Image (tube, rainbow, N blue to C red; front, top):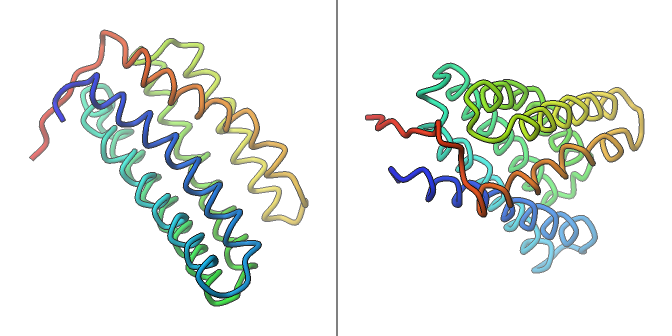
Length: 191
């Protein structure tokens, strides 16, 4: 994918798909009794893991010319997120809902922290309007904070603090599909 417009649309579509896959899969898997429906929910959750890792991989050549270190760390963040979410999903098959809860919050805290640098790169590079990068930074900081609070025992904190970051991701995804990246976008070929 050497075309930045195609990459932008792909990232946007992957972000929207991730919302659908994890949200639907989690709703099914956490309420279903063991059997086919539980398995279907877990499969959707694991497909979400594939989508979030793909987001980092597809963004790599766009971020690389502006901030190579951040590009690599963003990919690592998405791999971390996808890995923990997949572990949590598979734990549901074993009846370990607590492990899924823990894995989810660890994954989301990692995403929140790792995506702070991503938003700094977006701001500096002007790949998207600066207001969007600032919104993302604030949203991810709150998101990470809420997940850390949840892990520390503050029940419901991650849900409350998820809203700004979640709304950013939805808006960002739609922005990329409709508008794409700014004129500073360039794609590097990586061998």
